[in-house]
Length: 125
Image (cartoon, rainbow, N blue to C red):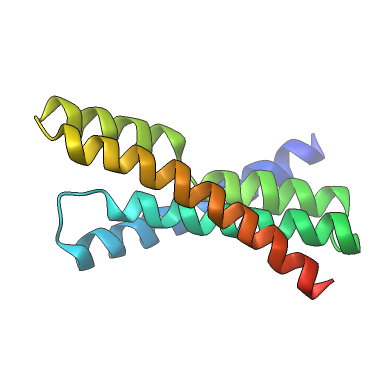
């Protein structure tokens, strides 16, 4: 039960942060392209790579902290379902090129950010 609470509280915080950050980016961009979702997913991937690297290389997170930060906070902060729905909406709206660009950006930048975070952790370790 304690583990579920750690994930749940972390998820609440991450989801609230996602709502604020993605909304701000979307308002700032003024674009129909889903920049807010892309931003939080890439930032979350970078943070997860960094935390996973630090946890592996320096053992800086105990199991409870891993649950709270990596699964809870970052799991709540990032969002695959919103990415999927925004991509479908773009495609259905006749914006196939933007839909494909959204997929390429999320996958490419997300993987690159996670890898960069892990490499960054190696330099910090």
